[in-house]
Length: 199
Image (cartoon, rainbow, N blue to C red; front, side, top):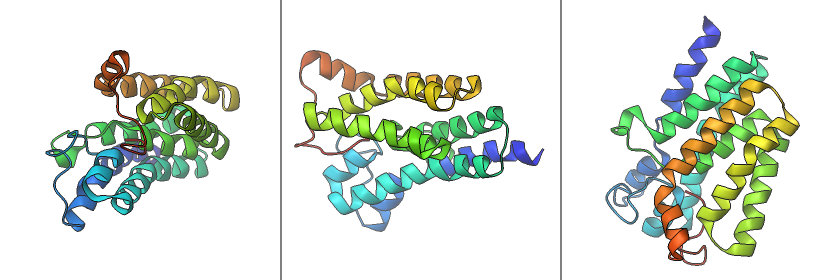
């Protein structure tokens, strides 16, 4: 029973919006009402600069990393581990404390992957960095790295529950990036030199 409590706790942790809290502390506008309207690191960068964006990015990653690492250290079953990671991710996308208006989930998903194992998170992060460097488009780097994430999980930690969890995370992340995908198809998506960083 105690194991199962980790799942709702992960959702509640994920529901803490780093972007909104950082903006409030630093006296910046609510990221849900300015810029892209997305409470993520890229929009915070537009509103408050690199320091605010870095704090947001770190907070969003920790929301995914901490509960999954805890489940890992407790040696819980792959099913509980998968449920914990998915709950943290859903908390970020649909936060209980902020009217269920969350971010797009890249940083929190990466935190979950690092919680599963440094080699998993590191592989996804390296793909993001490589694509971002070559193509100079943050959203495309996120989409490509997360599209490959289920394969990486399958290769490095092939529990069916964990692979299924990552597939769900990837599909939800693509859904949240649907406006970015439309812009990519039109050739109007912003570049990292203009925006910088994952949302």
